[in-house]
Amino acid sequence: MATFLFLFNSWASDSSMGTLISTLMYLSFILFILFGQKIQLWTMLWNMSGALKKLEFMSSEAKALTVKTLKEIGRSKEDLTPRLNVLLEHFLISPVDMDPAGIVWKFDHLLDVRDSKFKDDVRMLAPEADEVQINNLENLVEGALALNTIYRVVRHFYLLGRKTQSFYLILQLQMILPLVMQEAEALVGATKAFALGQPIGDGIGPLVASKLMRNSEKRKVEKDIVVSEVELEGRRVLALKAEGPGGNVGKPGDAIRQLIEERNGQISMVLMIDAAVKFEGEKTGDISEGIGAAIGGVGTERFKIEEEVSKFKIPLHALIVKESIQEAIMPMRKEIAEAADRVISRIKTIIKERTREADTVIVAGIGNTIGIGQ
Amino acid sequence: MALMFSLAILAYSAWLIYGAASSYDEGKAESLYNLALGVMGVLLAVSSLTTMRRRIQAVRAQSIRTLTVELCEKCGFKSVREFKVGDYVHKRLGPCRQCNGDLLIDMIYSEPLRREGF
Ligand SMILES: [Zn+2]
Image (cartoon, rainbow over all chains, first blue to last red; front, side, top):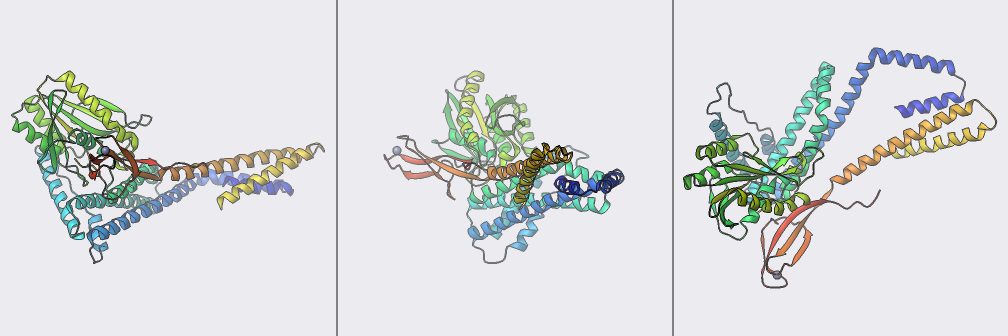
C-alpha cells in the first residue's frame, strides 16, 4: 500500500501535476476521516480470512494424516472419512454446576464414558491395531478434533463479524487470533508426534518415573497406571506413571488413592512431577519446587489427590519442569529430555531433607506417556 | 514475486538517489525531492525484505528432526540415530554391539534442523 503511494508520488513528481496531487491528498484524508473504521474493518477481515484459510488447511491436513495413519495401522478397507467426520465433531457437555456438591464424580464418570467411547470407535476404525497403537491413534484423533474445533469456532466468529459488520466483534477475534494460531500450530506438531508415537514435552513426568523404575519390577494398578517399588537414598519410593508407550495419561488420582489406602496412610510424602507452563522469557527445562497437586485436566484427578492426602495429613509436594504451551504438546525438546536427570537429583534432595530413612514416599510422574515405556 | 517487486523498488530508489546527487551540482530544486523519495523507497524496500526474511526463518524454525539415543548400561556404549516408528524410551533393543550387555533406548528428543544461513 505504502509502496504504491510511493510509486505514484514519484511518477507524479516527474510531470507537473501538483494541483491534482494535492486534491487527491485532501480527498483521501477526508475519506479516511469518514470511513476510517470501515477501512480498518475490511483490512481486519482480510487478515482474518487469511488466518482462517491457514486454519482450514491445518485442520484438513491433520484429518488427512489421521485417515492415513488409521489405514496404515488398522488395515481397514472401507472408507473411513464419514466415520471420522462424526468423531471430529464429538462434544462433551459438562455437568451442571448450580449445585456443585458431588460434581467431581459426575465429571469423572462422563470422562470415563467418553474415553471408552473414543477407544471403541478407534478400535472399529483400525481393527488390526494393538493396544499401544490404539492409544496413540486415540490421541491423534483427539488432536485432529481440537484443530477442527478451533477452525469451526474461528470461522463462526469470522462469518458472524462479516455478516453483522460489527467492529467490536471482529476486534475481539483479532485480539486473540495470534494466540489461537500458535495453539493450532502446536497441535499440528502434536498430531505428527502422535502419528509416529514420539514423546511430547508433557511426557517429562512419566519420563522421570520411568527412569526411576527402569530396572525393577512393575505392577499395574487403577486405570492404566504402573507402579514400581524402588530404593532411593534409603527410602522406599513408590514410583508411578501412566502405562506406556502408547499415548495415555491414566488416572493418577485413583492410583495414588489406592496406594495410600493399601498402606493405611503410612506414607511420608507424595511428590508429583509434571510439566507446567512457563512465562515468556523463562528458560525451557528449568525446574521449580512447590506445594500442591501438580496435575492438569478438568480437575477431577487433582480433587481426588487433595482429598486423599488431607484425609491422612500427608505432605504434598510438587516439582515442575517449565515449558511453553506449545512445547508441551510438540515432540519433546532436548532441553526438556535433559531436565529428567536434574529432576531426579532434586527428588533425592527433597526426600533426604523432608523424610526419614525407611519411610515410604510416592513419586508420581504426571503427563502423557506417549513414546515412553517403563 | 514480492521479492522481485521489493528488489525493483530498491533499484529504482537507488537510481533516484544517484540522479539527485548528480543533479545537485546543477542546483535543481527537484533534486531534493528526488532524494527524499529515494531514501523513502530504500526504507520501504528494506523493511519489506526483512519481514519476508523473518517469515522464512519462522517457517524454517518449525522444521525439526527427532533423534533416538541408544545406550548400553553395561559398557556405556552410546549411539545417536534418526527416530524410527516403534521406538520408545526404555525399549530393549537386544544385545550390545560391543559387549553382551542390554542395549536400550535412553532418550528420544527433537531439535530444530540445522540452519544453513540465509
Ligand atoms: Zn555394551
